[in-house]
Image (cartoon, rainbow, N blue to C red):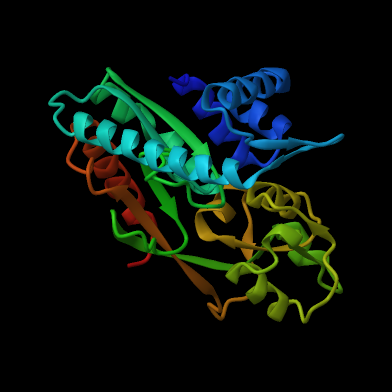
Length: 283
């Protein structure tokens, strides 16, 4: 009989693609991951990886074992969902994933009210530009910029977030040729960046960052013009570049797994998010 922990480590290795990445995800050293893989191979009497000088390569048998591990992982998460759905008290941990700017400006600063009402609740906020997998329990609740398509998720449109061009008042008074602040290559295909490219006439950017708050801070420091949502422009004392109301908007979606949407702790957080985010968005 194999050790279930060995299988978990091997599954993490296959998902991460390397020993070092798996070790980082699991919070251990890479030697521990390698030892667990060897232990699983011995238990199953299968060759799961080819050991090469600089990397491990998954064998065909390894890929099949990884598929079984993936199915078992999803089943274990489904069991956890089923068990947690029977809870009656608002207590325990809830993992909420959302783009960092939304977590900071719309959610984190308002959490005091939630904790006062539910002192046994614990939140883990995960700032991520990509949607976390709810089926794999990477998060319990996800806020994203696109509607999720997984059949096991319940999704609702929170509203539309409008973006406009903003700059510091001093910059608007003194600039001669506009300079622009935008995303780096990692976000080059985002709707905001494509719209900004059109507004900037495809000029080179004075500054690029994958972090919207850094862009806002740079605009406040007089670097140039940034494409930002109104709530962030207000935080940093920025003014709209034009008065014509020209803007672009993106959808903000809330998603939760159907098995746990009525669990008290999950419902408490989704109700909180709806109550505080919807007024800040355009319906």
